[in-house]
Figure 1: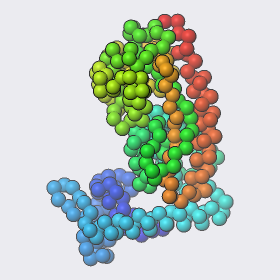
Figure 2: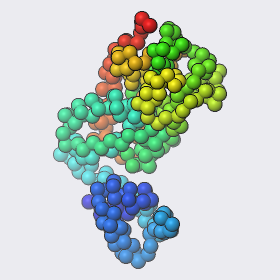
Figure 3: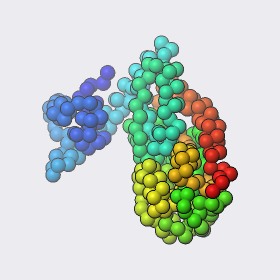
Length: 314
């Protein structure tokens, strides 16, 4: 509904890249450049500075950016409210999720939500918790599902599901036969860690600190941004790691990894975040309510999934 030139300009300004904007908008880069040029001709001023392969907003571009954000938000709100007069839940829903949630809890939830509301076009962005929260705060995403509480004052956080983390190691590791393991004991062995910005990394670092271990003193062999890469490194006996119990069920059953409960137990709350000041459409309300209800069932499912590593005979 809003001027297409304004939508294209806004996307380029958010990404500070014509190439990234073209990918997001499913347009060619020349088409994106043409739309921005048309808007600049309309205002008879340049909106972007271009130098050394990078772009930045001019003062006029900063001004237009502020208005564009408000205009596009109002347009989206208008369309949502008019649509709600028909009693239908429809339209695009921009969802962000951390990797663990996106790969384990969310697929079934999204499938069931789509069955109930077939007119909804759900679009999923997968990133670490910090990135997802930032995108929700800047209204690039409608809602986010993250692995650590957000500290952003502009976000509302809803606790959805409890998730237990365990130490994983090779079945041949010296700690594999333990009934539980402490932070200080883990600190004596090579360790494989998630990257900074990961919700899991934040929770695990807090666990070490609260149990008398400085995370900087760990024998970190490598920092990896991929959960599968971490599992592969641990299977190769390159170190131990701490991960969500729900993500290693298959490996425990196959016998390629061993999971050992932490002492004290380490649990975290998976959270849903949305912008406090943003208009909550009927669609967003329906999704929030649906996720809250389904995550309660996921709590039960995760408890059932964790049983294989309890009472191991190793």
